[in-house]
Amino acid sequence: MTDEMMTLRTLLEKSSDADLLREMIGFTAQRLMELEVEGLTGAAHSERSPERINHRNGYRDRLWETRAGTVELRIPKLRKGSYFPGFLEPRRLAEKALAAVVQEAYVHGVSTRSVDDLVKAMGMTGISKSQVSRLCAEIDEKVKAFLSRPIEGDWPYLWIDATYVKVRESGRIVSVAVIVAVGVNSDGRREVLGMDIGPSEAETFWTEFLRKLARRGLRGVKLVISDAHEGIKAAVAKVLHASWQRCRVHFMRNVLAHAGRQGRRVVAAFIGTAFVQDDAEAARTQWRQVADQLRPKVPKLAALLDEAEADVLAFISAVER
Image (cartoon, rainbow, N blue to C red; front, side, top):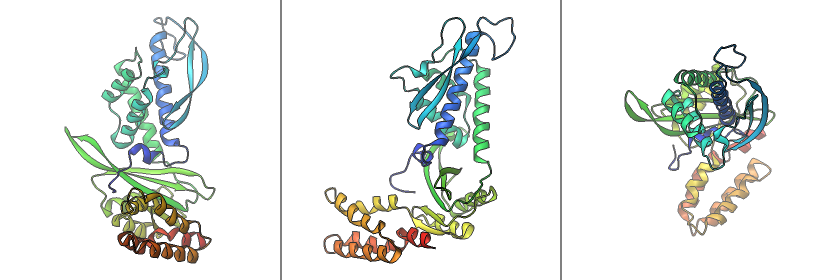
């Protein structure tokens, strides 16, 4: 979609506090601890077994700082001896491996091999192949439930974006487009509303993605923000009948490429003055003044501003309606 592709983790973290990724990291870490303790005690939680060699003794709470935010863990306690998960040891990059497995689950389902590798990366022992398979199914089920859940309420603002990732299909590595929709509701709450994968970002792919969101209950969309992909713009007009705005982040990347390294900060500050105006007319006037100021020294940059004015300032008109 853009020259500087956003990573899948960045897309997932577009929710205000990375709920999507953080909750899945917490869920998977908790299940891995339960499975490891199951091996240490010789029996599942509350299971009566002649092979039992130890018993549980409640939990102790622990906060785990990850790239996706703070995860609340409940670490199992044992009656005999102690238990501490290896992935909480200092300098162990377990949460990076865990985040990678969770991301894989959202793209094409998690594999037993990847979970096996995860168990080793997290320094955990005593987890059997059958337990790994069970955990794979639990992760996939949780992901499927999230991606198909009903969408309730009005979501006036919708951000959509994509990145490309490598996946294995029929024994070969191929590149697929992963698209994510993040909505903001009437109360200002952000939430990842949907995710899908496809071979490319064709208009038909975007159209079907938005139709899926609509079937799940997406409504009340006034403004859709994305980069200037023509397929997105056409799909938004066809399915949501909402205004479209060019993403300011993507636009500024394109603009600042023409500003030179030393002039980027000044140019960004100039353009930013248009975004803080009180109404649409004032914003357009300021935008044109900035373009005229830049035109003598950076004509290409001024031309970009002329061309993008309506698309980048669309949010002001949408708010006023």
